[in-house]
Image (cartoon, rainbow, N blue to C red; front, side, top):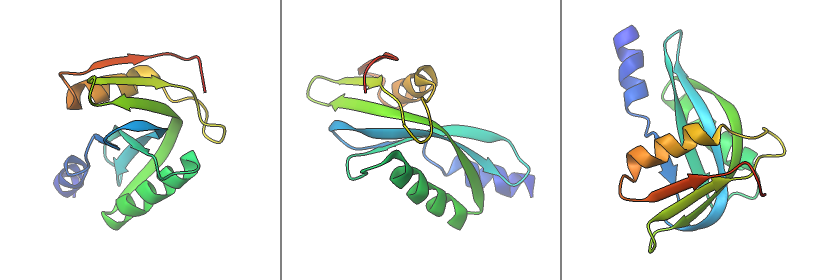
Length: 122
């Protein structure tokens, strides 16, 4: 069971964000049943609310037998032509995500980007 749970967790991408623009994001802790968890970043321009992203993410994870909880949200300003991402803001419904955790996840996925964060702004 633990091996299957770890395998399911390993198939979940750490970062899934839109290719450019300014959009909302959520930081989500994903867990396999009774197993360890990991934090993932999801950010999309189609979402009117942070909850829209979280609900879709939760549904996708549930289909893989994984649980999750939202740790907070914010906004991403993604400028691929400049290789820059800025993390800021908060979610009214979920509160402010730990932007330092989000930034580390983004740096792992985009090692050639300049990635910054601030607690200011909405």
